[in-house]
Amino acid sequence: MIKNVMIVGQKWLAAEVFRLCQSLSLQIIAVAVPSLDDRLAIQAGVHRIPITCAPKKLTAEDVPDGVDLLICAHAHCFITSAARSKATLGAIGYHPSLLPRHRGRDAVRWAIHMGDKLTGGTVYWLNDKADGGEIAAQAWCWIRPDDTPDSLWRRELAPMGLLLFRQVLNDLMSGSVVKIAQDESLVTFEPSFTAQSMKDA
Image (cartoon, rainbow, N blue to C red; front, side, top):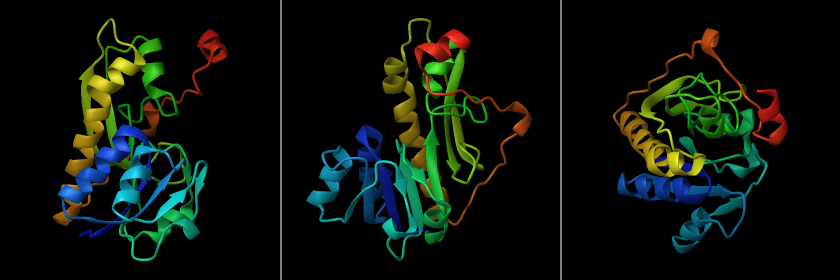
């Protein structure tokens, strides 16, 4: 069971996860954002929820006592092991790929660049390995021939992330903790998407 959560992230997905937690009557006791002008920070300010600015790393000192779960939604900061341990259940995050495929920061761009016909999203349990934690929920979608990273994210992957977070939070609220190990034999990992990385692909 969960009651108290901390949201770490930014932009549309983090702001929608904030609303989702409110709708589920979860107590948001803190948020962490990369900048104080982010949508999540603005929402937290309206509700007088403590805000931490953590653009690169979230430490145990940033996590208040009493947190059951860290929810990482469009979070690009590193969540330390000590920070994860401060939360009773640990931390979940959303990765816009069918893990273990396309681990790495630019999963959506690489899926399109590599000619994948389908992709998906994964809510997983964060651990010390980048995008390598156990899977809590997963879904898939088609990649259209004319898709760009922005169109695929906005049409499919961002809404999918919100739905998967809802599924996992409902599971946890009912006492069900889903943890499915990733198949390491199927792992792919790509670096940040740059002109050089395209050339080398």
